[in-house]
Image 1 (tube, rainbow, N blue to C red):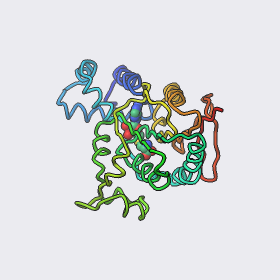
Image 2 (spheres, rainbow, N blue to C red; image 1 turned 90 degrees about the vertical axis):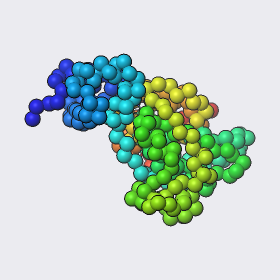
Image 3 (tube, helix red, strand yellow; image 1 turned 60 degrees about the vertical axis):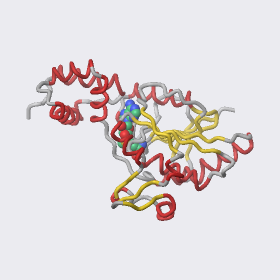
Length: 272
Ligand SMILES: C[S@@+](CC[C@H](N)C(=O)[O-])C[C@H]1O[C@@H](n2cnc3c(N)ncnc32)[C@H](O)[C@@H]1O
C-alpha cells in the first residue's frame, strides 16, 4: 500500500514532532504518525499535507493539538501493582522516617506524563492513607496532552475505568454518579494539574518522588537522557524515581542509583 506521506514529508513531520516533544517516530511506527496526521487534516479540513505543515509552523495552538493527537494516553488506576506496593511498603515509610529525623514537613511528588489522571490520583490516595498529617503532601501532575489534562482535572471516570481501584479506596475516596465515579475533593485537592512538555525544564525543585512511567518509551535515547537529567536537578538529595517496567536507565550513564526492593526495581538519588 502506498504511504500517505512521501519520504521528505515524513522526515519533515517526524523531525518537527521530535524537536517539539522528544517523541520519536521511526520507520516501524510511521503508520501511526500517518493515521494521526490524516485525522488532523480531516478535522481541520485542510486538503494537503504541505498546507497543514505551514499551519503548524505558524500556529502554536494547532501544533499543540497535533502533539496531543500523536501521544498515546493509555493508563489505569494503580497501574503496575508492584510499583504501588513499593511505594506503600518501602518508599513512603522510608521518606516519613527521613523527614521526621530531619524535621522536614513537606513531601512533594510529581507524576510526569500523567495522562488522564489515574496515576496521580492513585498516588494521592496512598499518601492520604499513609502519611501523617504533620507532613503536608503535594502532588503535581503534568502532561502535554490538553485533552487528557481536561479529563484528569474533572476527576470523573466511567465504570469501566475504575476496575483496578481497591474496594477500600473506591468506597472512601469516590462518589458514585451518572454511571461512573467522581474523585472526592479531599483527594482532588491534593493534586495540581499543569501543562508541561518534558522537553523543557519544569522549574520544580525539592521533589521527593517522581513517577514518569510509560512516557520516555516513546522518546529516543538523547531525549530520554535529557528528561532524566532534568529530573535529577529537580529532586531532593534523598528521593525516588519510578519509570515504567519496560523502560530502563541502563546504559544511560546517569547519576541515579538502581534500587531493587522486594516488589520492584526503582531508582533513587541519595546524596549525603
Ligand atoms: C502512556 S501514557 C502514561 C500515563 C501514566 N504515566 C501511566 O503510566 O499510566 C504517556 C503520557 O505521556 C505524555 N507525553 C508524551 N510525551 C510527552 C512530553 N514530551 N511531555 C509531557 N508529556 C508527554 C502523553 O501525552 C501521555 O499522556
